[in-house]
Length: 254
Image (cartoon, rainbow, N blue to C red; front, side):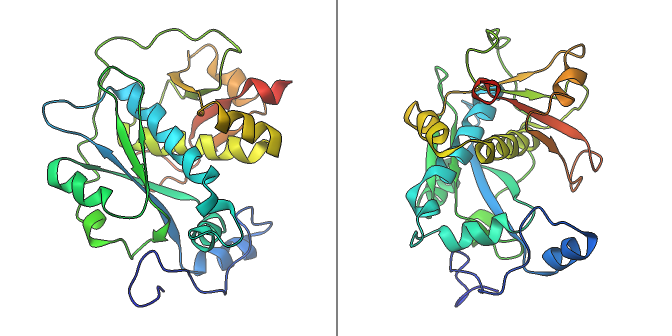
């Protein structure tokens, strides 16, 4: 599955159909091939855990930063073959936590660290996609559980149309780690909806965005709005097909 046991080695050139499989047969063929996952690691020190909302927003920006990096986008980019293998599948993302020496070891691996905007900012590191069953040992040993973060104060209200907002389903209870993966999905789907000029403008601005829980009154209209929507595959925590996040980008309404 990998070259010489290196999880960051380019995958086999024999790839399945694109992620938007057109039929059950194509879906089965796609899923029969080696599956890749995008690893993310959030730094959670015992004494200074990040705020939940800042961690979610930082995870979404980390995914966008990775997708916009030349190593992921250029034809001869170091990570391009891995990104293509990953996006030909289910664009899975898995969030793990690290602290102390674990974080130091994670930072030594290829990837990008993105820092949040809070007073004590969150730190999220995103890595090139790896085979689902071939994680680097320094990431594989990290815990998925233990990401039940909270906010000391309610997040500030958002002025409608002022910036991209990733709206969370108000009726789904998700750990911070699960929610971080979901907003990462939403950011990625929104990125795919943009043209080159819109992507450049968002990237040059530093990927401003907010993550908020939608009101129960507003959620049905958001789901029906035609905006980028995440439906979870149901591997962990929530039922398959659950609508988890709607990406509301003002530029898409222009």
